[in-house]
Amino acid sequence: MRVFIAVLVLIFSLQSWAKADDIRDFEIEGMSIGDSALDYFSKKDIKKNSRNYFKDKTYTPVQTKDYPFFKIYDGVDFSFKTTDKKFTIVRMSGAIYYDDKVKECLIKQIQIVDEISLMLKKRKPKIYDNPFMGDSTGKSRHHQAIFWFDSGDAIDVSCYDYFDKVSNLDHLAVRVVRKEYVDFLNSNPYD
Image 1 (tube, rainbow, N blue to C red):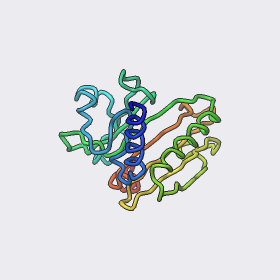
Image 2 (cartoon, rainbow, N blue to C red):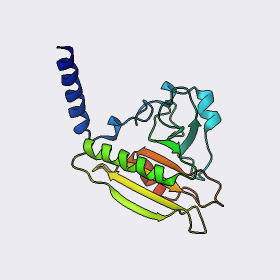
Image 3 (cartoon, rainbow, N blue to C red):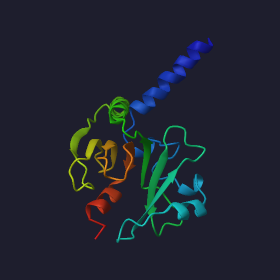
């Protein structure tokens, strides 16, 4: 009888994921878009890990790594509106480092894309394999699969294969992002 109940629970939980069509249904280390970062990090940690990438200060990016509650990812990044006192997450990303093991990264990327595809039966990812824009040599690669939602929100699963002279670690990134943040990035906030 216990096995039967366990199977029913598993089936019903999979059905709810199979109908997932809202990025708030996806979690990275237990966090979802729309959650307050304060549910996971202290204000002190958020401020300490905030980054200053943009001239446009509409959003604040935060990079965290090696927190005890991280079970899957080596690091988790997120962003919130700078003026938002609740630190509501509008973009989040989990990273797994694969230094000089890009084949392993690509295998993991395929597994994650397949899992998301099962959840989002109606959506197919757009696949890109381009030079990484941050490397002027053109030798670094960005392997990307993006699931776009009707709302303009997106889930992106990428492998970054950096050329030796670029000072970054090869890694997998799984991103969940609101349309408002996609629009912000498209506005070229670096200038």
